[in-house]
Image (tube, rainbow, N blue to C red; front, side, top):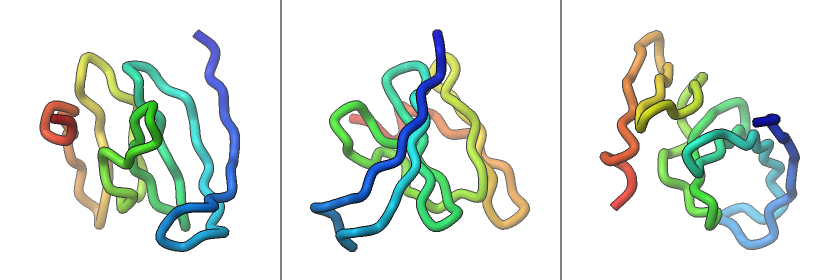
Length: 82
């Protein structure tokens, strides 16, 4: 599957006009980069993992890695999506 990337300007968010970069990933989630921090959105555009990490990996079998403040976290999508 080819990876697609794009950038949009938010028009209906907490701070309209902010730019965010998106990367299409597997398992129905995209990682989002805003102001140098990363998080995840679902296909409806809802932020499911807060945009607060220094780096993230893509989800694989429901898990991803994320780094923040020199710590590494294992993200389980079941913890974020109900």
